[in-house]
Image (cartoon, rainbow, N blue to C red):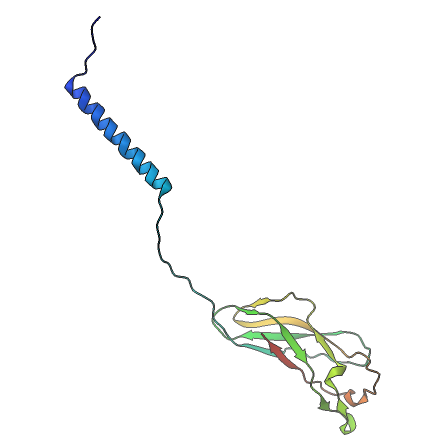
Length: 155
């Protein structure tokens, strides 16, 4: 039986193929199992000021009357969106009819149509607010026909 022998050129080709295969195996292993570290940057949000004002007025309030809806403007004067976690409206005590005190506790203000936090964009942002005048058990005539001031705050 005759024994098969490779020629020198065949040995060179086999050697080159073996080196390429080994390099590919090492590269594949390195590609799928590599680790490392790095750095990057991210921008954080800023803070801004929100202006709050009545855009429309609620009229015709009376003790135990219906809920009156009016519009408030949350104004973002900054360059980006802001998150508002709450908006609170309160009526201060003020002098009403006959020099008598109209008590702020006689009024209730709410924004039940929204879930906080709110995201507001730069410029005007309009939202509905509600005001009622529940019966207090006291004579509330001092408030009759008066313009009711509202102090707004947010965070």
